[in-house]
Length: 116
Length: 118
Image (tube, rainbow over all chains, first blue to last red):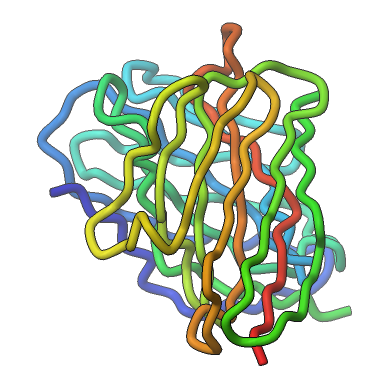
């Protein structure tokens, strides 16, 4: 069974600095998708970034980028120039392409605090 | 784009009553919608997957007779918590995957519904 592990329950970063959130996963599949979702205090889950496993190039979305290491099964999220609005729970998630739909597996989350 | 709404945002009900939660994809069609439950300070737990026009697929341990799911159209799915009890109090979140490429693999989430059963 696939699993997603976020080993950092909490992280803190100074405003304008860079922070990296870790995520590892376990799967025997070769085709899958990885996601980072942000859940602010409003509880709304917001898609931050998405990576297709077949793509070697790391996904980027403005200040957010990932370091996808397929062989190591690692998918870390880097937030550059951190802003106060980045404070939230961040969930790493895995979706097996072609598997049963709904098989979006979440990590336990990392709570990110941003200090002014 | 890819906006999902949920109604109501919060509901308080008495034990033994039933509560219906609606999930709508506002600007896209979704063949598949998902229902999650989230306990405080915990991750999301998938309850069931619903496909338009067919019966929902429930995850192990989720009572299908208690959590009734109806996916009536490509933009609407409903979750009915029947004979609610205090232990059903939780935050319920729906999500939807667009029918059209390129985002069929991506789930977009509703804002959630806070259910409190007295």
